[in-house]
Amino acid sequence: MARDVRPAESYDVLVVGSGAGGLASAVSAAHRGLSVLVVEKEPVFGGTSARSGGWMWIPCNAPAKRAGIEDSRETAETYLKHEAGDFYDAARVEAFLDAGPKAVEFYETETSLQFDLGPTFADYHPDAPGGMDAGRSIVARPFDGRELGPEIKRLRKPLKEITFLGMMIGSGKELLHFFNVTRSPVSAYFVVLLFFKHMRDLLFHGRSMRLMNGNALVARLAKSCFDKGVEIRTRAPVRELLKDDAGRVIGAEVETPEGRVRIVARKGVVLAAGGFPHDPVRRKQLFPHAPSGHEHLSPAPPGNTGDGLRLGEGIGARVQEDLPHAAAWVPISRPVWPDGTRGTFPHFVDRSKPGVIAVTRSGRRFVNEAHSYHDFCQAMYQRCTEEGGEICAYFIVDHRTLRKYGLGYVKPFPVPYKQHIKSGYLFTGRTLEELAGAIGADPVQLRKTVETFNGPAAHSEDPEFGKGSTSYNRSLGDPEHKPNPCVAPIGDGPYYAVRLEIGDLGTFAGLATDANAQVLDEVGQPIPGLYAAGNDAASIMGGNYPGGGITLGPAVTFGYIAARHMSGGNS
Image (cartoon, rainbow, N blue to C red; front, top):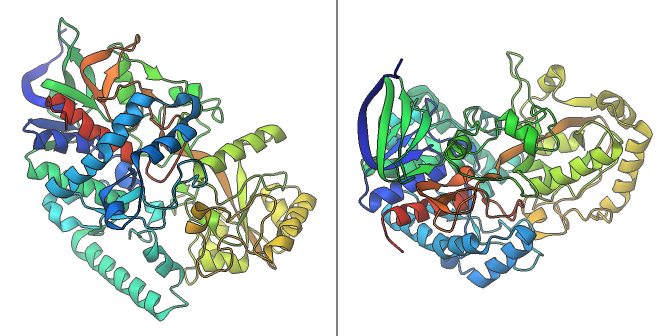
């Protein structure tokens, strides 16, 4: 029996997925005079981007130049060669470095997307050749959600684990105000005012209207799309790509609540469906810590199941699977919700705070905790594999540190914390030996580890791992704790711990593409009419994580590049 397919719709460009890569492709194409349709399988738009920190790593960007920060294309190229090693893709990196500043200028002058600079946001390996102490990471400026009008209801909400009662918190100075709320009248006033505005928004709008981070990025891109007449069609998964007799991709069949519809795309189809963080089959194949495909956690939306990769493979595209790391790793803890289900909390900030160390069940430290989350998880996997135990670790803190900085989903004073002990999220013990018993660690070794750490830590030193030794380490420490904002001794009990597992912030393995964002076939030739952006395209970082925003920076840049190529432009 033949499938019931509704009459075809025709556009110049069809974009599959509504995260930053997809929306950047859409708005860039629309500004070049092309008609565009965005389709999204979930009932809301924004993808993982809307849940993210929203940072974009783009060297030589305009905000950095306005701040007087000196960078160069050659310096950035040197850094990426060091970071990517044997997996350095010269053609695509050059395209990214050439187009990145142009893309930023385009978004700032032609769209609603505006940027702020992270003035102290260092590259993750700032001491490597070509590394920088600041200037390459930018973030979308906060956005008033009311500017989206009724479309705000379809914007994916931020990851609730990294909000406070649904309120989004910016990094940098704003985050410091929250840490200092009980110690500074200025900080207290700032936080109370924000909280009052948030509660007002909940009353009148059902969600926060002060959009920050990745939510602001997506909202600004979506507003720009709507301003150019681009439709974002939700609840519309793509089932099949369509090719003509010459092998050119000419559109796709899309499932909608009204039935299946054939979408013709005269200029091209862009795959930007968010990679495969929730595809257990590909995770089993590519994630060494997930032998069954299920020993892995991801804060990505559940709909990110690898659709874009499978659609590409279905017409002969190649997935690049040989990168040394198939995803961007991040330590995840699992807070318990009132209904008994568990969340996924990615640990971005607390790793760098003074008085925080991480141990495996052997009771030993294994890493400079303030290094990047990607490096942290690599060290965690290596140590646990060497020890032959479960792939997990624990953050250890004393009571003073817990109440000053919080730990994971546990918030600082004055927010209560004992409910997290009752739920099993937060482990505790009056002594280090009691805590070791609670987490299944070696009690003798745990005490030895803390005593070994505490001696030098009393002088703000960490000779074993060098915590606080780089500008990136220090940028996320406590600037009021001197001389080393990342190191302090662990004091008297009671003690606390949270369990860490390996998760991801996006996948690196993806469709092989060229410098024009065209998807490549098995022999390395472009498939006419097919493009990829965001995590559906293989990362240009060679399986490494050079700095904050190395997924979203290339996503919005290659979205710009794809639109430029589809329109026949070269600038």
